[in-house]
Amino acid sequence: PLWRFTESPPDGRLLVYRSEDIKNISRLSSPKVCGYVNADAQELLPEEARAAGEREHEE
Image (cartoon, rainbow, N blue to C red; front, side):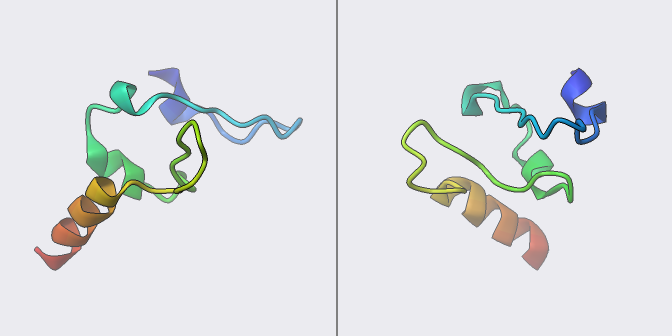
């Protein structure tokens, strides 16, 4: 998808996509990913994604 290659636009827009659209959770650890936003915006990163990231760093 093109969003992987999109740099920050000069007008400050934010790209948002659904968690169902993320096929590879490891992409969340990219330095260009600043967080995860859900519909209620109560958490920035879901627990299962946080746990998956911690497991990857331990290996």
